[in-house]
Image (cartoon, rainbow over all chains, first blue to last red; front, side, top):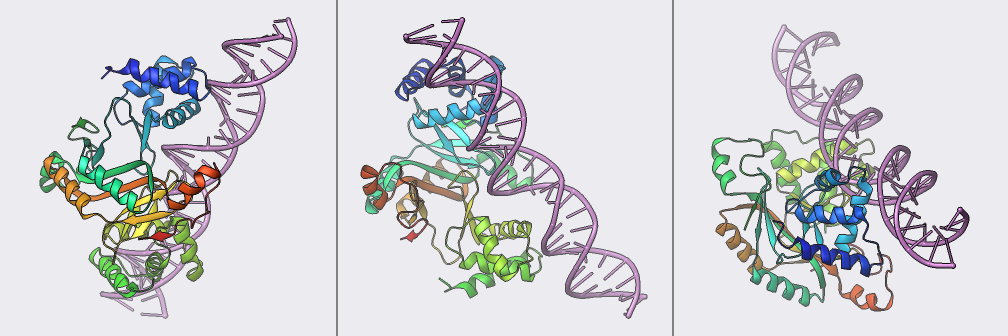
Length: 166
Length: 166
DNA sequence: TCTGTAGTTGAGACTGAGTCTCAATAAGGA
DNA sequence: TCCTTATTGAGACTCAGTCTCAACTACAGA
């Protein structure tokens, strides 16, 4: 998990420099936390993580720094849920799409070259310039599909909430 | 635009019946407004629209009724933006995906059979059961692409904010 | 007509994500 | 040491969406 952190932090520091921003201890702590916390995280999770190292840090600084990381394309927003975005670090990752289990919250990543090609073609047809995209399938994962038939309405968390499968 | 409203309202009434809910004047007014307001609307827009006909209606009722319509698959949520969902009526519509212009807010709909096939295949590979999906390309539309080079940072609204192109 | 019941509604309080504002602080140069 | 500028964090604020609860409505039975 920590593999590649050094390189990611280097990109982050470079991005800060490019934007004329200083590499303050707070920003570096937030960057490091963002690259080591689990792959799809909320602002709150990131904030709690950073707090362990920098107890005096404020929520606002976390939001601000995330915004910088997004500008630098080091992190992307994922509008999976209603209240509150999820964030995902990008560096060292090939682009991928997501399946989100509506029962247990598990997030499965998948890649499909043909989908990417087709969407590029569709964009070209409309002369639309793609900056980023979001492609998410909502439904039931393998485990929840099974248990759906027997235990209806069971709460989340049964099969590896927010784990990662590739 | 009003074409097919009758059929949509019939589906809505049937859905209400199926769920054991009454077809109250409020619910019908909300249904009608949802099917006649522009194709991607916010709760606030819908609320204002309904208010014209039923001035005493409350926001909560609009939220509640929208939830019912979503259960009945007559409306879908689109997590395009940070603060607040957009909603889109489904009936009489083939499934489609979206391109969202980050400059003027224009929403372009597109269909691609091959993408649908590929995503079904990817889901099958993970034994994932798709209930719905969201596929959105973010970037610049034809018009904004042009003007981007000359007038950087111009505000939204120049090229048909939230219009529909197919 | 009256009463009881169940479903529905709307006002307003509440929650939680995210933004704004502003005084305090830190860092760096003269 | 003083000045300037960038950064930070607390707290107020906004906005979408939910929760709660009293009031209202429709309907059935007495």
